[in-house]
Image (cartoon, rainbow, N blue to C red):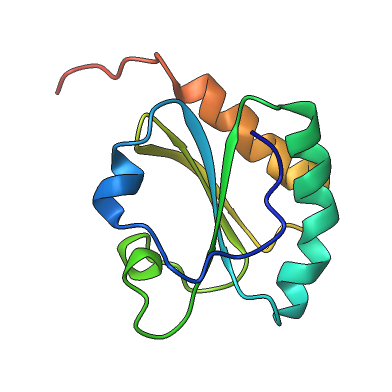
Length: 117
């Protein structure tokens, strides 16, 4: 998969997102959002380094259920999922470094078992 340039107006359901295998970068924003536009070069640069990551770009806004399911407050919000489970997120990245860090944190959290209480 590669960078997705256009926001999907028809959002997938939270159940559909949870069922996706592998690593997914879920991006919430809007095509007119200045912060979203400014973040695009950094997101694209990082995804070009990691072609195996699925990028799903969802237009968010009032009454949008997927954004509410992920408790999105600011745009862009990038949520990194692995096998449907949130592993990390970054809000309003200002370049490639925060996006890269979120993907590295997500990769580091896979397979790490937590001790039982």
